[in-house]
Length: 553
Ligand SMILES: Nc1ncnc2c1ncn2[C@@H]1O[C@H](COP(=O)(O)OP(=O)(O)OP(=O)(O)O)[C@@H](O)[C@H]1O
Ligand SMILES: [Mn+2]
Image (cartoon, rainbow, N blue to C red; front, side, top):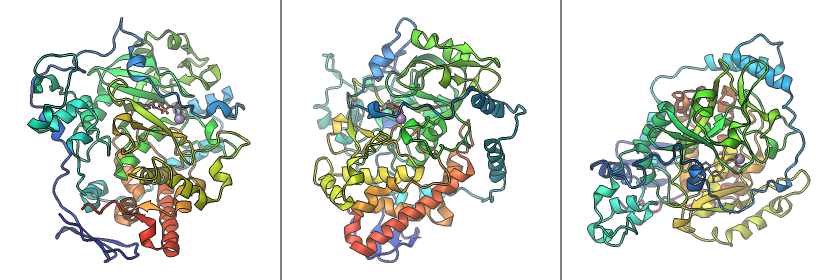
């Protein structure tokens, strides 16, 4: 359908659903097709039709006697430094054993002397129960909104994996897609009969997103992560904090991050972003936020309770991991693993319930490296990761720095500049200052969305909005039009972001994922972004500020 867009300034968004017309402030008119997302479910549907032979997922990727394969298959990463060499190696202010005990007691419901944190925790509980009740599902309404039904044009070559491309190809195109280089046999759909949700989810990865809006495999994969037996565990090397590969019954792989802190613990104000602990609940919340913003660039993540002994220790053959297990003085099973920081007795990870049970987050794993290698890019507004040094963007005129970024590849053409601004919106909403690098799939070259990984240091503070995260938006005075329109929607009472997030995360096995103050901070930050853009529009004019990404409609 042809787009006729005429734009004047405006912030109010009105929807005329019945006639399929989206009116932004009465001035921007975008005709929207109300057809189902063309990319959605096709791969799943076609792939699900056949028999059960599989090239990749038919047998366990890893199992006893096959150890270390997870690292080889999935763990390879680029050599780009993560910037931690200059990291402050100062002591963690919250690591004293007494403090750790207090926190565990709190979770276990034991009597402890009241502390500020303890009181805060109780307030959170009250906040949660005193929330106004709303009827109906705001989330369902959101996903019915025209802005969430804008068709995506996905062509065969936009799919990441060869089997997925093959499934979407015409008979003519199929002649040019060699599925199995080693096989002289004629290729047909039999080799693609992979019915496992995790694999079908991977087939849905395109240069634009990790999954289509209505891909049923997202829910299926989350269900699998939540309920399936853990069959194998191994440490993922690299990074500053402990992470575990987990293999499940259906041969899918997940990336586990453990509980470290109670939900209501705030990052201490004197803390640098790079000395902060990762938060498993931040990874979960980040997935929901990414989806609500319609980016779909973060792999699905779920919380889950694990038995540290039977589901981690007994499922691992990783000697480096196994030798770090111990029982704490109060009888909780603990371990700390092996990593470059925070992997020692002082930073132990301990069961927080019934001596064995531990909460964690599990992210669905991207396709293995050999099949879909990724490239790591330095974020242009990366922080310095030093106590004393400043990053270039902090000591350069904002507009000049932005011009410099915009004139160099990959930001000089294509989608990537808009993607970095989207990432800015995402990180500002979560208060994530730890965006040193981002990754893309090599197969897509420069023309591809970044993958939203590593949000473990987000959601650290509820009363502080870190304005410096917004620097790319206010010094470039730019934002994608679709993102701007969605933010306006999320600022409205009937689509309020905090309500959507609360609802979206409600079904997680370890809900509530975020405390009320974190949810309310999201609403405040939406307003701050909109005000920033509003000022830019007044100063520069709407044509200069909004990056047109709806013109293809
Ligand atoms: N779901 C996933 N699928 C595939 N690879 C992943 C996934 N999550 C993370 N990774 C890979 O593992 C790396 C480390 O993960 P992550 O950044 O979350 O851990 P981290 O301990 O915070 O690392 P760092 O200290 O370097 O920030 C990522 O850079 C990415 O390459
Ligand atoms: Mn990290």
